[in-house]
Length: 235
Image (tube, rainbow, N blue to C red; front, side, top):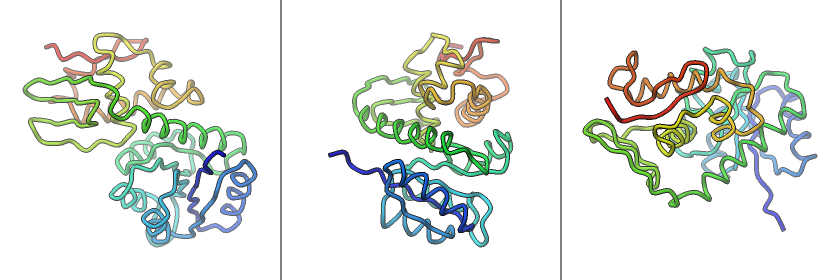
């Protein structure tokens, strides 16, 4: 018998909360609900959900603050419910908080379920791959150990979200090979995201800010105009 995946839904609007609960329960997911950021943080600690769907605009601790607190305790996938589809400011802010995904409100049933399935599938894939890859890149500035899920800058450990690490690992695992936007999206996000090219651009930019000595003149993650990106440790 398959283990029921548990989703924590966080929203201060009761009608929206009930709607998402009904959609998920009707498709075989276990659902735990929270009406505030404070309650959500407690439930993440106590209940260890497989996925969190988190509203941004809430009184008290808002979605951004809640996501930061969740990230201090867990790598659980977090889907943020935002007001604008692919609004770059929201995506960048979500990156800084550790969110994995962004959906507009209101969201269609099919899209919500597709994104939930994709997030859970990615998490399962990451779990099953732990310890398998032996790829290590190292020079006097940057070290990437895929097997240990460890990245350091000048010997200091760098904190990356799961998504940021998976993106960097994909590029390192394919050093010297150009990864198209579509290949990156399929490998890191899932086939459901194949048209969301802006995600790649935003995440690459953010990753460069973290790992490059000079992000405006990248050394490690280079662009193949009109095609995609590739990793190289060469000057």
